[in-house]
Length: 288
Image (cartoon, rainbow, N blue to C red; front, side):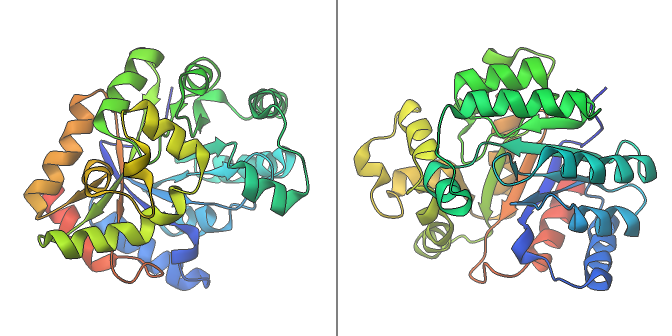
């Protein structure tokens, strides 16, 4: 049985969280008090120190890693830390894994980018051998092959930088059972020029990574859409911006397309900080 993540969670990169445990815990308590069921940690580290601080400091808040890179995070280390946290906080930790991207991986590890799907399958085999339950891990999947692997070998998929149409296709590929939890970028700004400028601060890095651009091409976007930090058409498709009602409507599109859960990443003009004020506004609207 997959742990209960709720219908909507909050996504933020690990680098946005403060480094001291006390402040991390205070923020986690704040989020839990908002009625948000799940926090997702982008670019998480295999020592699981941030998930541990969040779990230790709260009672009901679930934590997902989105993602742990299979090239840089050793399976045995992740499994050891998972076992300790799962024992202390059962049914509250969901591990997300992914293959990452060729150029960053080769620079970080010195390893050749060779048969990433084979490396992924070997990693999943190792997790099985180390006793990490399949219902407690998921994959950052985009293309049909990895979506099928996610459905067959794990609890489900965490697609990133996708549209509701991708969610619809993913659900068709995966079938009705596995967890489907796409990430959705959100800007709480009604001025189109300002909202798109904030969105592009985040998008520019992803449009230099083939995993994402290839997926966006499969969804019908062209090279013209992918130049620089993206066309208005692309920005408007992958980033929900506007007032709270507009943003909630865009979240609902993913649910209607087959998502069980939507991991909402709030973007602001201070990307290095957690958007705590915006989280509070969004949580009030969600739970209102």
